[in-house]
Length: 259
Length: 259
DNA sequence: ACCAATGGTTCACTATATGAACCAACTATA
DNA sequence: TATAGTTGGTTCATATAGTGAACCATTGGT
Image (tube, protein in one colour):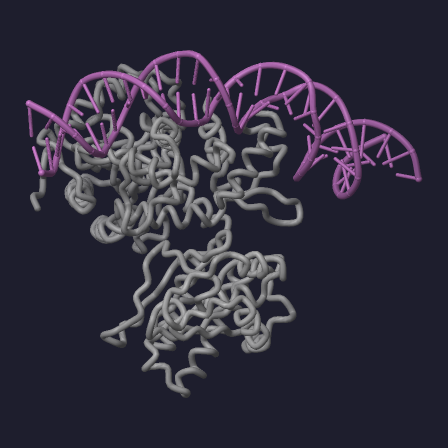
């Protein structure tokens, strides 16, 4: 493994519940020698990607990632474009709307908007990692991905997040054809119990899916009349977001709303 | 130079007007061999920090920086905390309010809010690089920095951004004592002509300045009565932002507004 | 048609990275 | 209070990865 990849993989150890990590713990998490971890962390620190904090000198992400995020957004205004569309979806459906982005063989939650209508809502977490096989968003992405990507994803161990999570590769493959037909993926309790989500893929300028936009609701609120509202909102949201970022909706995608 | 630092320095070549860079151009900008650039870029790409775009296969920042920015924000909610305070400042002063963060020996613009009150306003750019010696924000940071940091900054070539930019190290040092007294730095046309800015430092939990909050206005609008409003707003904004991020205002800082 | 640029690749040679062992300081436990 | 175990951090003989001149196919400009 290249040195650069090794250093950057250290950054993957941070998450919402682990925003600060000490040197020894980082070495353990990364499976490398403490001296090696120290040197890699020092270079990341010199470059502004991490900094040391607190009296115990633990490490956390540095401000440089904020700057690069802004420059990334200047190139591909995904977060900016998502904000308005998610607000519209949350408004129309009265449920949680969110966007996630493919990263390797998983999804990363990018943005979410809650509806203020209900006291209970499906909660999202910034930068949360979602499964491709176990979420509506993931299935939406897989349905429009090349076969070799689908094969690679399904060849890996598939986590059973809930008793309802489908983990049989053939059963997952069978789910994909109807999703291609409808443009919409549904997942009921696949990632979190009692959560029913609808998702549609977002495409890049090559017509490849780069993520998905979704509405997630408690199962009890997803009645037949509401489903139709959610599907229409998600489908138009996906097309709108694809176009907002200069993406291209492939011809195989069923377009329920034209621009 | 370490390999990791070299790779990460490639990311510094992206800016608001250069969001996509080809392989050969990146090698030239970085002063390294094209084969080396290719290998480093490949590792950055595998890690999600950059991606290739368009028919010419040029590189741009990848989505991973968005995810890390969110995790950084979870650890140090600087952008989130800044938003409300900047809106208040822009509302009270009817001018552009902004926050910037120290990165090495320069400042990076983090967030800004425009006032809708005037047809003309001081424009800011996301992730813009500002000078420590030539901006109100920079001087605010320097005034409360350790002597060795001040010496290191002033030992480097100081860019004359406008005819009004002060570039004599001794003259700049002389500016710092009154700033320490008042807690506020002013800069008139030091970085951009016709722009008058007031800034105050933002501190971390060790009481060290990590950036500054500022109000920038066209010189013609900064009348004596408005100056007082701006100074008070900037000072209270700096203290509020310091506290919002768990920072500590050092005792040497003149506190115009207590929490 | 020719030239210059691009993105991308190869491999003998060179530079950097590694990690076992060590240190001082701190914390937990008996 | 003494001991053991943990922390962040460091060293340097050894091992591994990185380098870049030269090359390739393709594309674009003249």
